[in-house]
Amino acid sequence: MTRYFFLLLFLLSGCTDSPAERPNANVIPDEIWFQDKAELLHNDLIWTSGDTGNFYMPEIIGGGAALFDFDNDGDLDIYFVNGGNVTSSTAVGNILLENQNGSFKDITDTSNSGDTGYGMGVTTGDYDNDGYQDVYITNVGSNVLLHNNGDGTFSDVTQFATVGDEGWGASTAFVDIDSDGDLDLFVVNYLMWEHGLKLDCYNAKGSKDYCSPTNYMAPARDTLYLNNDDGTFTDISLLAGFSTQTGTGLGVLCNDYTGDGLIDIFVANDGMADQLWMNNGDLTFTDVAPIRGCALDEEGKAKAGMGVTTEDFDNDGDFDILVCNLFGESDSLYRNDGEFFTDVTAQHGIRTSTRHATRFGLGLVDFNNDGHLDIYEANGRVQQIGDASTSDPFAEPNHFLIGDSKSWQPITVVDKAKVHTSRAAVFGDINNDGGIDILVVNKDAPAYLLMNVHPDKSNSVLLDVRNKFDSPALGAFVTANRNGTIITKPVQSAWSYMASNDPRVHIGLGNATSLQDVTVHWVDGTTTSFGELTQGLHALDYN
Image (cartoon, rainbow, N blue to C red):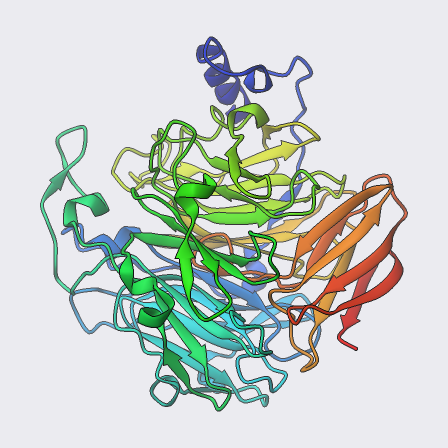
């Protein structure tokens, strides 16, 4: 049914769409690529909004989750961020699930990892270079840094590290902004909002509903913490330039988008121009999004940016950006052309097919390992005009678009109907079988654990790129030759929406039997060649 709805949209708008957006004469049959195996969690992971009927903004915005290997046993564990109640002291704690041979065990209490703030997003990374991934959580209120002690436990070191940002945090990222070998910390803040603050707003039906962020007229300033290499951080937001601009930030990406070898920061703003903070190499940043063409869409419109992801989708050696937006707004696909970005959303077939839902979690991943990137979007309205098939007035079906060399087309790939108010979508190879799986966070409903069951799921190379401290080499990138095409892939975990994803690099082999000339480009500017790599998991260590 979903496929035919998409085709109807194409037909109705065909008089204005580019040729690439018109319906493909060769209809792609629906297949089952994913099965929900939430029973493996042995626990309903429910992001609790604390919905009071008063339409407090945080209730409709969260929440996030992380896939990361906290115990260094080679498989992905889950950190699940939870909400609570914004007007009371009712505590709903976060959850840590340990992956035990494909089944998950709740070890929150024994690991001392269950923060009880009103949670939003999360990022993971080894900020102190001890070989274990730490966890940073954004909240409505004080954020929290959990230090991984390496013995199955965590310690709350927020006060010592001085990273307890008191704003309304959204997505966040560990990032080495000065290429000195340790991870700094960037925090995206959404609104200047106080507990209990609300406005009376109404939807198109005249019913009381959640407000737009523009109603509050209170965009926030993002925060950059510099790692002092002693377990503490210094807030350098003012020095760096982030205090000169405000925004309604939700999504974040940290990669080199300008080709100078330094890590830049892209922020997707909700109803405001997006920002591309160019790293000047002296601890300062300049927002170059307006001059490089990725602040607004091709029509000069600031969209409601939420989820973000980055890949080199056109294989030209630089990183492109995909942003998902509000109902009525298409995704924005910004192709990196070196000195500037070009909005190529329409010519790649996703202007019409993406604008009929409100999208949050976002993945640009080769799920069937055919050598082409596919798109998964986790959807859910922010006003009470959702799917009529459910009692949840914000619920919308999530979407999957299959990619080829030119465009993306919607198909149905999940084993049964899934219609909830979805937020974060987190991506990683949970069972190390070569296929990328998806954890989807839902508002006031159990999460999905969508396990990849595609018959070609093993036809890939998975690269565990490690720095000199035996931790994920965030900010590095990999190049490889696949049947004559040079593939460029970032080593990253902070993308999608309020999520921390599997930092390992996944490359579908397509018709190739191996990758040639695999090379890691480290954050410090050096490179290491690993030659030819065949199907399966490979550890690529800093030499």
